[in-house]
Image 1 (cartoon, rainbow, N blue to C red):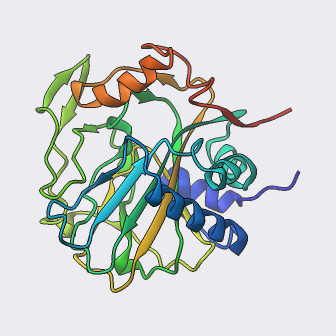
Image 2 (cartoon, rainbow, N blue to C red):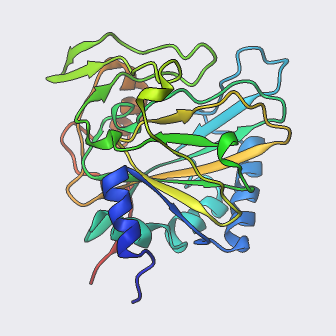
Length: 277
């Protein structure tokens, strides 16, 4: 089976923490994801949230763990090139799904994504990557920016809420044996960092390390609705490792499904998407 990513792209992912992959998804997959998000908006899960505080204003909508609720998402997760790309980037023998998210930002919405890294938000530990795919063309100043090399800092930052105000969960210090810090004020110190930003056409995507800091670098207000779909995926030997109380709601969902601290990321909630022969 031929490779889907080049050695150059694999090295950029490893060294920089994020890589642009051009034209990996044909228009049929994009249309399928668009339909899935529309269905998700019409039939949200109990995890759905509008991050915009004033509900009379254009909203910033999100839902997660929805892949098994909508056929369009399930088809994409299992049958698109996504998991094989992840396996090549992570040099994995097996790739398991961790979580999907969809985001829908209405035209005129002033809410934005804070700078954060995904690794500290949930009770997951191991080698993991994230697919970020926009469902329309994006200019780099309108999209997300990644802090180059931040996945190699060996630091953990507290979870920052996406809700307006960007409330921080917990306090800096040692939690469950790990040190957590406040996320640096990147927006006030842009000259201290090198950012990765790209123009994306429909069918392009970004893959990034779960530890890479990323967020909205500019305060651009979209003139049209924008939609994003993301997938977190894990290499073999990734596990559930309890973090702080901030993850208790997601932890309760896993525990209700029979998972406990130390369990492998596999099974019903974390199905295998790719495995080498």
